Length: 188
Image (cartoon, rainbow, N blue to C red):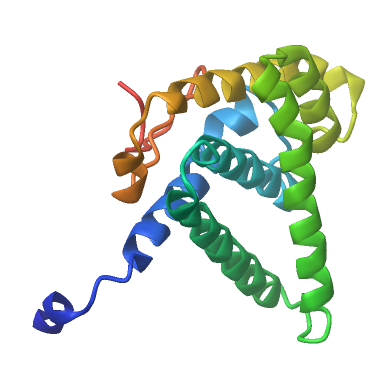
């Protein structure tokens, strides 16, 4: 359509691309096969939270104006979660209660993942991943360590990515080990 060229660019396309990249990476089959993340609503939700954390962790070093990009991605995440709840048949009166749980889970993961990533403590991150992603099942300790290693490597790689990359809607992440992903947003 010719009219799209006359629209004011309010950045929504960039936000949707960034959030779309988070969701796409979260659906990478390697997480559900190689890392044995439960292929369930909860498991997929945890992968979205883990990848959203990686973006927000990277953006926290930016100035306030640039960090606003993260807030807009968080808003897109909330809109998507709201729509998904409604699509799953959650009633209008229950959606706000569920959304409070979603927000609590999001901020809980930030609080659990950020200190170990900042400290470079893969063991503490693996403990947090085991608790959150694998429901503290000790038999998943090896996978939790592998997923924590992936997250540490991704956080390290994202440090070197210029802000302009994110502002352009790209979220370049290293591929998870053994990935059979067809994701287009990967590190070289």
